[in-house]
Image 1 (tube, rainbow, N blue to C red):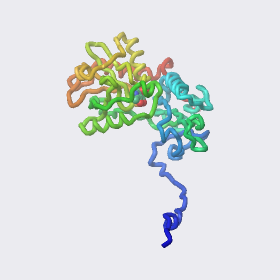
Image 2 (image 1 turned 90 degrees about the vertical axis):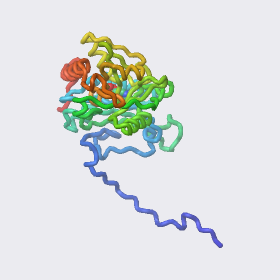
Image 3 (image 1 turned 180 degrees about the vertical axis):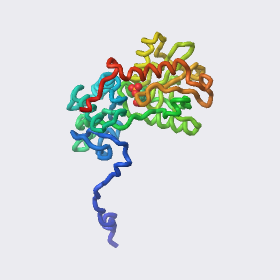
Image 4 (image 1 turned 135 degrees about the horizontal axis):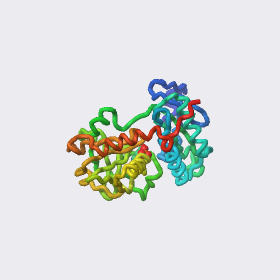
Amino acid sequence: MRQTTAIENSKPLPAVSEHHVDPHSYPDGIAFLDGQYLPMSQAKISVLDWGFLHSDATYDTVHVWDGRFFRLDLHLDRFFGGLEKLRMTIPFDRDGVAEILHDCVALSGHRAAYVEMLCTRGASPTFSRDPRQAINRFMAFAVPFGSVANAEQLRRGLRVAISDKVRIPPASIDPAIKNYHWLDLVRGLYDAYDRGAETALVLDFNGNVAEGPGFNVFCVKDGQLSTPAIGVLPGITRRTVFDLCAEAGLATTAADVRVAALREADEVFITSTAGGIMPVTEIDGAAIAGGKVGPVTSRLMALYWQKHDDPAWSSAVNYR
Ligand code: PLP
């Protein structure tokens, strides 16, 4: 009897459909991709891009508050540093990238925005496994400002769980290259949700506190601030806390932060471009600072937002 093949038995090929995306299922914003400005719903990349297939990408996020970028130069420094370490090239210099970011925000019309610049390894026309064959792809976008902590959490402080997941060690990935290796952080988040907390902290390879999904962490003990030194992204908001503390005469160090030290802290807060300085008032179900936002945290939060219209720390978006 003649063997039939799967192909012969198969149904006719389906038609290739035009893919229409509901623009309302994306945040309102503007992206720059492959030389064009597009609504977020139209900004798409190939499934063959190494950024997607291998998480081979670097990025940076800066925010706009009240029509002004906050510390854009520092974000550009970190982004271009990451590109160099990953041996990626883009057809724009710093001024060119800055101009694209200004344009994304101006076209979006947002006065408060979350603005991302990113570069993926891209794809090779021959699907080569050699990253040198890939054509690097630069993108940027501006969407409405978003925060790790919502308004209620900012007022009463976040409930955080310490997960036993370990952040990818610096010997594997230099954390100064801001990256999308987030499986440890996402697994930490699920640990937190399972325990009734709102977000997570994960550990470094020595079992000390590292960072969380999109933020660094600080603790305050007897007026002295400390934040993990190793295995964490050198956050711009973390750096800003150091700068604010220098101005305010507060002592701050980057050093190992033991889990026990965090639990025993007088105050704990987290830092991110997505939200700034955000209080933590509960760790693994136990109250920190009697469950209230502490005085050092409150003072730094106020100073942080005051700097947003200071020309030494911020620059006006060119809305034209
Ligand atoms: N740590 C991680 C893993 C992050 O992704 C981020 C920001 O996205 C931060 C820390 C905070 O960095 P920054 O203050 O520069 O936003």
